[in-house]
Picture (cartoon, rainbow, N blue to C red):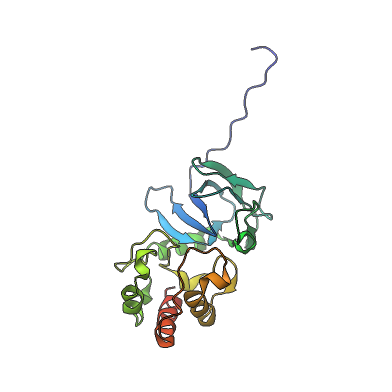
Length: 228
């Protein structure tokens, strides 16, 4: 029709796609490499190669969340029942903070993630390492984790734990934070979150395990910390 400009065509990256799903109150992350291998599962952190355009597939399982890495680009809502696409090109290495930018419930302010921009070769090495089970998966503490039912909600590659309700914990020991940006990832924080998640993150769907003996909680926490 005369007088109308054609619709702009969005870039269609041929490379990595990263699927991020907002949940109350954490981030489910799945890397879909261009070669079709994967997905590589993670949670509450994102890694990006510098200088390469990445397409994000943004979803929600419950309410409206909003994905935003202020240092890298604008925000975009994550809406139940649909997939929104966001294309980002990081031009500088570094670690950046990303919040949920849409009120999503009790712990909205306690829902964040880190975005680490890496050199492309380092990123590919990292992704290859995370596509395999952690070397620490056979360490003491695994039986406590499995025996107390944690695998019903969490997946840990290399074990029978294959739950999908909560975050994938296959390499949780290598992440910077516990509870989606709330606490530093150390033994004390892991023990606290296992015992009293509802006190640290109100509205969390994870049940408290404070009824377990302290040595069992410590054993599970130490095992998780070893999953790097």
